[in-house]
Amino acid sequence: MRRPTMTDVAREVGVTAKTVSRVLNDDGPVAVETRERVMAAVRKLGYQPNLMARNMRVGARDAAVGLIIPEMGNPFFGTVAGGVESAVRARGLTLIVGSSSETAELEQSLIATFLARRVSALMIVPSAAGDHRHLRTERVAGLPIVFLDRPAVGLRADSVVSANREGARAGVAHLVAYGHRRIGFVGDQPATLYTRRERFLGYRDALGRAGLPFDRALVETGHDQEAAAHATLRLLELADPPTALFAANNLASMGAVLALSRAGRRDVALVGFDDLPLAEVLDPPLTVVAQDPAGMGAVAAQLVLARLDGDRSRARRSLVPTRLLPRGSGELPPPPR
Image (cartoon, rainbow, N blue to C red; front, side, top):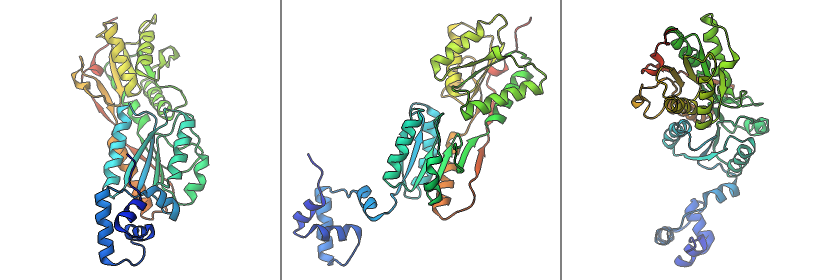
């Protein structure tokens, strides 16, 4: 069954499509009786105006905010989107979300799609290989553009990121405080990814402050849960294995938990960066450096709304703090030697 059109509404009322357009867009004089008949026909037929086409025709912005995230299935980005949506909805804006699958090509395609429909603002969690110089014209023209979790590349724009380096430093220092001297690092790929790089620097910071040597053999990577599990097993199989692990994102944490379970190891301390659903029911419960993804989304949305309200100040970076949540896994002591 096809969707009713403006022509169908006009035929139902016995007027021209232009008269229907005037009523729906409140654009020009129309008799009260005609207006009521048109609206009655709209309700009867279930007609929905094509707002996107109208906005493109008149050069107006759509009442929508476009958000691009790397992965739909990652709960962290879902919570970020929820924080954004709650804030923009209160201002009558609709959030539209697309996934780049962590590829620069798809990210650029989604950006082009959102720009074509003339969104009111653009929010992006950049892909690992993203380059955003092509957005300079839109930025100069006044389109609010905010980057989340990772800053833009080649573009000066608003960004909202976690205190990644500080949080990682605190998590590794926590393991050091419980007596660990060989601490493995399981991070994301590629190594150049902003969040991975910042958290690795925090790991190095904590080792340096404790006077511990850096050992490249204790550093492993894996982009998803299964790859992180294999990375963890490689660390456990070293001739001089780590007594503790720092997992640098939620998927790395899940992979580390899986690997330790498969190996039957309950003697390896673990601190993860970013909290997990049901982290408290693991055995032992998972100690984490918790981010605030909903807060990150809300801060980014407030930046967008401020820009829409006319704020033309210089681009700024907002840092969202993390907090250490000791639950048990990060408090395991090293085995006696």
